[in-house]
Length: 462
Image (tube, rainbow, N blue to C red; front, side):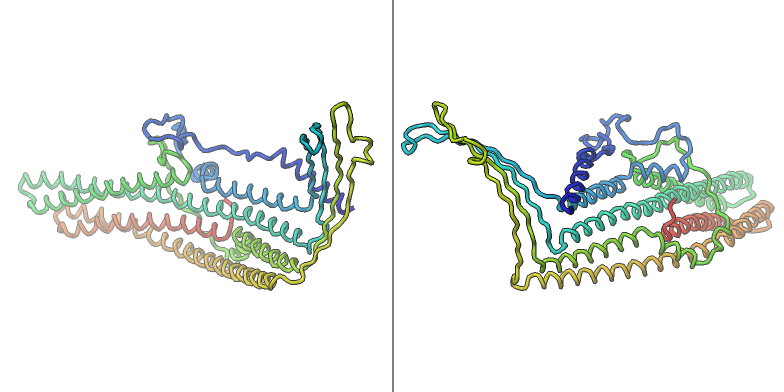
């Protein structure tokens, strides 16, 4: 009965394998086979359509999950792992083979008479017992397949986080560019006004040169910020899997949004419970531990005897000229036999016990790896939770500092125009405003990045 059940299971697996034998997935763009870049047609590139004017974060994450080559590689590795698992299940099936052949004899020994012999054989063999090594090997293959499945989810978790932070880097670079643009305009206006005063004899040359120097410095910082903005767009396009590693110039980004503070009022223990319950890399490590345990059991199974069943059926037929042949009936020319073979290796030089010790050590290694993963997850959740709470508080403080710096700079500008303060005070006020704006933008991005990293550490699916 067990033989019939295993044979039926194998037949089902074989049928499924025939239907899904080929890996079905979208191949990479043909551009990867090109020998140059400029000769590639635009339609052959994987890029964003210009019609998509505004690229949101969720849209960018969706494109990355669709096109990122590393994510595709994890998916293909999963297909391979499950195929190996199904191959391991095939060990439960009997082995069937058939052969047929024909031989012609001619020579002095046969009286120079041609003799043609034909024959065929059908064989079946089945390992009825192997110390459960077949079972443990299949269980190990299943654990490896499950591990690959969790590895996909883990990489997805990391990819969503990386797209989020890369997207934030674009927003940050754009904000810094705007701040330096405003700083440059401020110094251009003051340079123009001071030049008019200087020509009228109401201002010194040093004041005019001061604003010209500061204008050039602001222009240099604006150019650097524009460079960083382009580089950030390249990095985002690359992680999204676009072959141009660039976004069309028509693509714009929304303004930076500030999340509500009450979103993060839950204690760290809440996030720790979620992380331990659903972090995919922790689940993958648990599957690796299962696989190591099954390998250990399989090593112990090598001490067991094995039992093999065999079945053979064949026939032979010799034909001679003149219609004479040796084929009379199946009972005379047919070959039919069956039997079993019991084998037990009593001593193999101690190799099996050393293999058990090796597998035991590897199993203990996986237990230590699981412990390390647990500690790492707890540390990450605690770290990013504290960073998020601190960054939310910092953003509030720096928002107030930004508004006060703007108010002070405007007041000092009016007093400078009236001749009540010197140029050093105005320079200081403008520097404080630029720094306060940059710190506020950085704090806002830090809040978003901390939330992305906390969600990733917890394992929240985006």
